[in-house]
Image 1 (cartoon, rainbow, N blue to C red):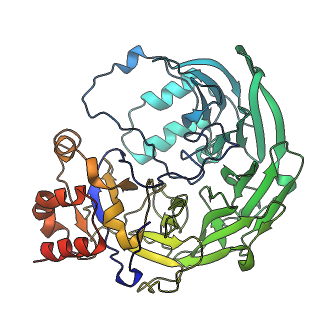
Image 2 (tube, rainbow, N blue to C red):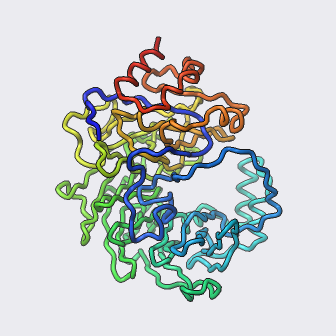
Length: 497
């Protein structure tokens, strides 16, 4: 890989409004294959063990009209995630808050082969799910009344079931409801028509101690799942992480070591045993903590000599909606693999108007500069997310992973990637990470995806995004060819005139 002068880091980020992720080929874009997952892509929630939440497939840009009433859904819910690849080619798994289903996806098919109740959860009737989908939501009070009439007095209490899951190379689905993690598989591995069965179960309450949130009765809460590269389940909890063997014979727990910190999102893993999880303060306006634990093969280490570390980042107030807690709303995303110089882990922070924050995953480079305002020298860079939303608005937050693909090397960030923000109808912004704009068909997207919104390119380092809309649009072609840091600096200087 080319040598980059780290003392001349160009840390500016480009933000654009976009609707989907489509990437061109660059370096090693995805993490190393985890042989214990069903697939390289779609083997775990958020696509892969690095939680990149992006796919390497080009999405054809076209207008297509589909009559949903003519399609037969794969039911489950109220939350239903069907992006889990089976170890059997042509099949997918759907994991929802009430059931697990095997889907025949061969050809252009998408139909349920068999399903089974998620142990510990109550199956919702088709009528109940239809009432959720077809209701006309007009305001919060009516929505709350309607959902409670279907889901009970505490709808939020059922949401953690089935949210995070994975599929093993033996085609077993691992998912939880409450404290119970279940392994679900086929009755006959050679005949999908024979149905599904519960293969094994593990009660995480036997190894994870309860913790109290908001003064409530202490409980065990699970908030994440992944798999190490030696085939162990990693379970995220409110107060720490657990590692369990897939046969469910034993498990180990490591706490965050701070009763004031709690996790509300899942975790990422790397091929060397690194486990990355971010926590937020239970009290408003206090820092959150980015943790790297290390699975040694026998224990969960938080010792620096094993490569573990922790670093503070900015927190905020309790949000009015979308995000849980005062810290990050994103599962950590790993960027940079193989021989790449810079290996990072990214989140959005807990600030009321969030920032994108990148941490050094491994040893901090000796010549890395300290970022002004950053709470830790491990923060490689942080930039505010603006999304074209007025700074007068007190909130700009997200409950989304930072999708990414490719190599994030801050010295060459324009050479490698651009960051994406899409604005949704409720004006809450979802932060995404997009690859470099080498093959980005901007005119088509500009005309078809956002006909009523202007494209806004934010040159964050200059803090003059709105001024540069037309200028950046005319010169975006400069980003379509690989550039060096020096060339990009010249581009920025030209734009700043």
